[in-house]
Image 1 (tube, rainbow, N blue to C red):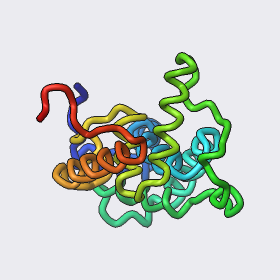
Image 2 (cartoon, one colour; image 1 turned 180 degrees about the vertical axis):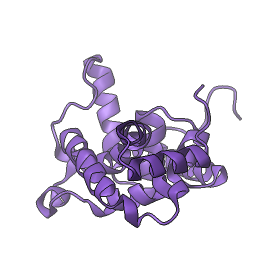
Image 3 (cartoon, helix red, strand yellow; image 1 turned 45 degrees about the vertical axis):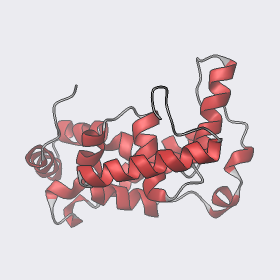
Image 4 (cartoon, rainbow, N blue to C red; image 1 turned 45 degrees about the horizontal axis):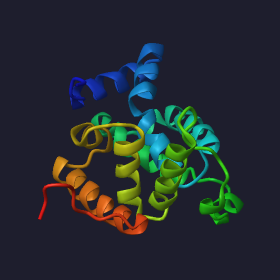
Length: 181
């Protein structure tokens, strides 16, 4: 398990980045890229999500002096990512019709199931979509998601629970597991 992300560590890296320390920029990118990527992946193809993630960091790093509370880098860059949306024609395209292979290196059956799940996630409300992608695609834990997004752990749990319920419904999967009544 990773060490918890501490607000003081985030603030320190933001301050260092403001002073031009390259390792601080790299740390912020490495730490918050899964969050930014998850936001974009919920709206567009994997390839465009990767491009938009890089664009979002360029915008954020150029505006770093505008961040008032250095401990709030996660929520701040998430807001920038949500505003740095794909071009209108891409947003209007039905992502469910995309032929993009999402999970390279897996069996065709697994890839088809993962692709179906991602397509269903893309139709969920934003809060559920982002937390589910962070959990299921990026593999982050609830506390890690809370640390990145600035949400409380309780809010993350609620978003994950409700999002999974809606995802199960969208996929036609029962919410009960073996051993439950």
